[in-house]
Structures are given as C-alpha cells and as structure tokens.
Amino acid sequence: MPELPEVETVRRQLDELLRGRVITGAAIHWRRTLGGQTPKAFALGTRGAHFTEAKRHGKNLLLHLQRGQAEAGVILAHLRMTGRFFVEPLPRILGKWDRLVIELDRTHALVFLDVRKFGRVHFESDAQTVLSGLGPDPLLSPFSCRNFAASLMQRRRALKPLLLDQSFVAGLGNIYTDEALHRAGLHPLRSAMSLSATEAGSLHAAILRVLKAALSKGGSSFDQFYRTPEGNPGAFQDEFRVYGRHGKACRACASTIQRAVLGQRGTWWCPQCQPTPARRQRSGAGFKD
Ligand SMILES: [Zn+2]
Image (cartoon, rainbow, N blue to C red; front, side):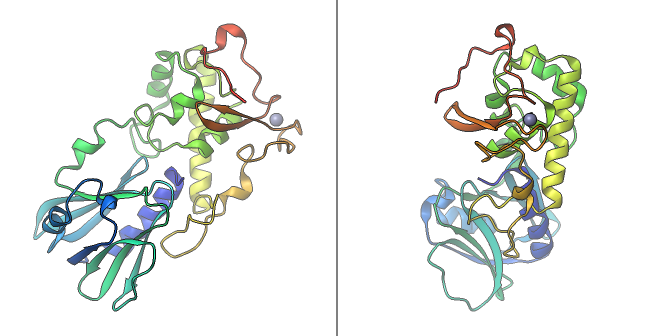
C-alpha cells in the first residue's frame, strides 16, 4: 500500500499537472470510489472549479479547488492498495480499471485507475473536518522531536501498532514503520513508554531519515501497482533493510532477519540490531506465528 513517500511523489506531480486546470465534467465508472457520495454531489461540487494546489496529510491527497478567487473545497483522495492518478489528452479509450474520469479544460482527463477498488476519491467542502482525527505528518510541521517523545511516553502500546495508528502519526504504513524501527535499533514489540529520551530521539530521526531517503527515490515499488503519475516505479525497495527480507542477512550486522505477524501485519526485524525487549519493556502484545 502506498505510504507517505509514494503519496508525496504523487502529490508533487499532480500539483504540476493540475494547477490552473478547470474541471469541465466527471464520469464515475465505479460508484463506491466516491465512498458514499452521489455522482451528482461530486459533479456539483467540482464542475467549473479550477485546481489551485495539491496538498497532502499522511496518506491523504487534498486537491484544492477555487471558483474565481474564492476557495471551493477539495477533492480528497486516498489511494489505498492500488489507486493511481494520471493525466491524458482527450479523446481517450476508457480503461478496464478506470474508476473515475475528471475532464480538464475539455482537452484532458484526470483518470483515477484502481485495480482492487479500495481507493476513495470524493469532494469535500471543508478539508479540516476530514483531517481532524489524524496525527502529525512527519514531513509537515509541527513534528518536533520533543512533542513526539512526549506522546510516546504517554502510550503503553507496542511501537509497531502505535506507529501504524494514523491518529498517532499520519503517513507511516507497514514498510516504513519496520524500516524506521530497524534504523533506530528498536524492537517492534517495545512499549512506547519504555523508551529513553535518547531512544525516542533516535526513532524520530530514523522516521525522518527513512521517509526522506525513500522520497528521494520516488518511493518504493513493492508490487506491480505503484507507479508515479508519469508511469515510473519508485526505487527505494532496493534499499529495504528488513521489510520482506525474512531469512536474509541484516545489512548492518549479518544476522538473519526475522518475521512474525503482529496485529495481523507481517513484521520484519533484526534480532541483533533490535534486541528483544526485557519483560518490563514489553507492551503485553505478543507475536503470533
Ligand atoms: Zn542487524
């Protein structure tokens, strides 16, 4: 599933592709893509508006709209498993997996393609209502080390499920959580509140480091679906240290990478770099194999 670096890569490109373009129509080919909104409400909200800026919070894309000089809401998109945006000139032939086609300036189409249909795109007159339940986004301020450490201290949960919780921090998924924990030398089952100030600082730095490194490579193409809007795959998967590397040698210490299921998610770690927590450091959540 695309995480922060992949969604940010998409955001940057959509920002370039869409700025100033006017929405002249919309065709919905898979109704559930609108997440409960009616095609009529989507059309009424968006038709005649133009794109100003593409923003992002966590894994949410926010395509801001204006009518004249007035703010006119946002198109809110979540790519989920396999959602992809691209822009093509008209006329075009409808693709098998095209779920939503937004006409731009009567000359182009912004297409939302989604093989597995979990992605969501809808119009929202006020983006804030949607974002209010989300935690800080690590690449947007404020994500200070001090605040992050303070919120860790208040949580008993294991680091892995806590970092996946979008209300705690927005944008991390399975890949970058495991990669950040390895870089910080922290076992995924450590209780957040057991971290020392130094460890909390290492984790904060590791999250930023891994997200920025991935972003510089256009994200990771961990399956055949993720493509940037230009159709290119990301390249960061070649630099994974633990994710998907079960049984392989740790790139830091040559120990064998372990895998287990935690909270229904595959979790990878190095037993040497990320020592098993002492009983008092555990959250109570256990691994299931
Ligand atoms: Zn190691």
